[in-house]
Image (cartoon, rainbow, N blue to C red):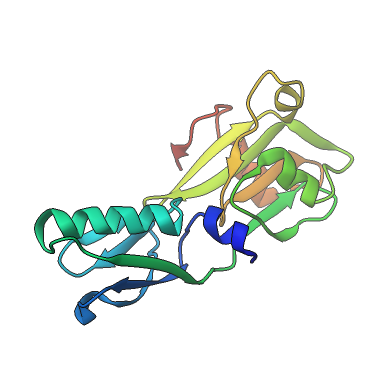
Length: 189
């Protein structure tokens, strides 16, 4: 990652950051962003970290430590290791599989990474499965309305599963897709 990427990189699940609190060894060390997107810190507990830059997290930790525990804390947060970020694309696409994604990937870009929909695909029924607070959720989208600018192109996040309905879709996915209503909202599944 280059320097510009590091300043704009948004933290995600399983990323490891090094938190340094000047003069307080017990608060200094490597921390991992957990599955819920939080960072656990002594004294202040769980702090939301996912989708923040290291600088934004640094400012929040400084504020929380300074509010109750330390006078003018000097905190630095540096990304130590970025976790692999992948999305699964399956169903009626040209090349199903796992694809690496960045911070701001959309549904159309994700389908393009899989070389587009295949012949016999149903672009009116594309379902995104996502874990939200430990529960599986799903939302169905219509690629034709997104391509025509009628509906917004939704953001795709690491670990999402994107399934395009159609002739190449397995029986398992076809059965599952039939139960998901066409809506832009994620509902528990």
